[in-house]
Length: 172
Image (cartoon, rainbow, N blue to C red; front, side, top):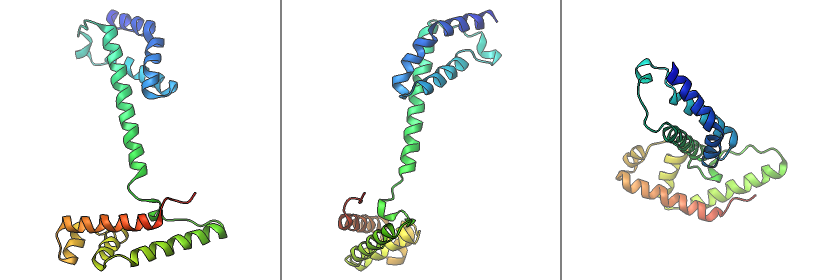
């Protein structure tokens, strides 16, 4: 138990500096506080097997724990943001018109999408419709069209690029 008291004193002595160290990594002082608290829990393990372990440089070890936890938190947060952004473009997200103006803009955008899709070669249009709007896998589209999966992937990609180019940047 005395080792735990020593670790607690060491932690309390360096706590403010650890929070200052973690803040620029995570980008928020509140999150840095959470990271430092989590680091303490890892620094003073609850398992009796790990209590007897001697740490040669405890301050450096504590900073390393804080750094690793902060970086892992940033990575996890970045992954969550990428998932939220998913690969759908602005014109593929279902719109919920709220005003007559928004309803008119939505109708105009859908007409532009339909016109852009009408310009596509038949196989490209079918591949795009089946994969993006019908929920079919590339393999299912390939089987339907009698093509290879890489060819269907290229067709869908080219069709998406064509429609996106015709629509231009999202109107704000």
